[in-house]
Length: 351
Ligand code: DOR
Ligand code: ZN
Image 1 (cartoon, rainbow, N blue to C red):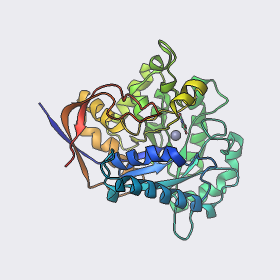
Image 2 (cartoon, rainbow, N blue to C red; image 1 turned 135 degrees about the horizontal axis):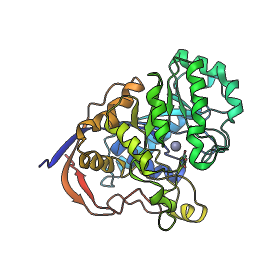
Image 3 (cartoon, rainbow, N blue to C red; image 1 turned 180 degrees about the vertical axis):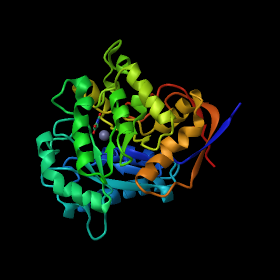
């Protein structure tokens, strides 16, 4: 029986690290588990241009560095390997010039349909997308990736993703060399769509959409900690997501959409977002191991995304041993972490 597993250090191509005191909780976990992390721009105010993005990446670096200096504070970090990739929010004012500055080039532009999710008020409405064609043309010529929160906020909640797919289709036709990522794909239709599209179209899949369904959210008592946008879907949808992740198909890669909100904010306001950064890697390792597809783990968690974003593969490995971690090992005070209270069968070996 396997009692040790070695994996390539994973990448997370969709993480909400937030700002101020929340960042102090997220950045160390990002640097602990991941090599590349694509940081989402929906801060208050949002990351709008390469200057904001550069400041933000530097701030994340500082938080990670301070954490390392405070010796023996968990989680342990190998900062030398951690790299923040940045994104800007697509607003009606975004121009090509805003994507790079003298010292920084953003990796991606994030399209949030206005009102679709947390802090998306500065996003663009669906009718405004057509006005950004000049920008998309520039992006395809210069290798910037368009990341899309592919939900139509005016559609019924369970149909929001399907309703947005024709809009993506039009973009793919108009910009055949533009790399597009459907973020946190959540439905069987979304998976089929991505498979049907040319190689320029990929998708991230989250840990929570691979683990949870509507029954976890509202099958017994309403669980605000399982609430996110897009909402988790049916077991049939989850099975299609698992198939896509387990097949090692190059179009699908990990993006956690880890999105912390304080526990009382989740309970009282029902804010959308699941905080998974501390547990996502051990949970995914357990899922792939239990499902007998461990050989696909590195593709989904590390190399598929790197290839899509034209980044070198990671060279660092993490080794796990079969040793049950006591529930709560990855708890974060003030926040509910995805499945932090379940025992995790694999623990990271610290060398
Ligand atoms: O559930 C979500 N929370 N989905 C998103 O798209 C945004 C995120 C957040 O920022 O809280
Ligand atoms: Zn997100």
